[in-house]
Image: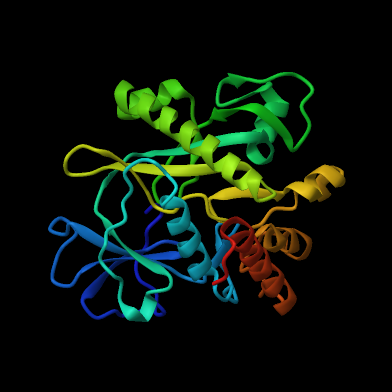
Length: 298
């Protein structure tokens, strides 16, 4: 996990596990009586917390943790490479939104893959004509799809600092040439396969980010969450093709929350409480993506 902090008063106490740290939306535990150095497995619990603009917001999004966890597990089954999941069942109290995972030595690179030019990538492109040192064709508009996905990594900054877009050469300097090549190749392979699966279900996978670690045998392993609403940008194919401007880029994530905050908060002090209708609309977007991709409900 990245951006870990100490436990909050709302961190669940779970029998057989000791709380280690909390991120903005997830909590991490070690087996009771074991330090992180001694542990070979960890418990990763997804909360219903929602964050935006580096702030935790109130209230939570009901069911969010379960939807993200189940979608991530669904994708892990379809990714042809080692992952961090184990066969150990999580505690019953959090079984719908938790996984027991192998402890890994995480690599300090966020493996971002873009199949469209939008968000921070589009902002960088408008300034330089490139993203993370990769030159792109002139004249691209926000939301345009790229024929060939690009690997645009970021450095996973320490807690309290912002991740920083970096070039591939900087990845080599951080993790070595072999790991850098593997990170790029596997990230692009997973993205390409996932984009095809999503397209079959009427969904465009615009971009995503992966995190990798190395297990005790030195095996490169995909970890954290994968291809969820919080780690990826998905668009509805029909809307994308029929609408214009920003309307075609309505994503299946918490963008509704961001948009409401931008209209109702000056980004100073404590953010206001989210209205009930914004909470429900956000929950519906998470649920809709899960249903479209998996054909199931949670």
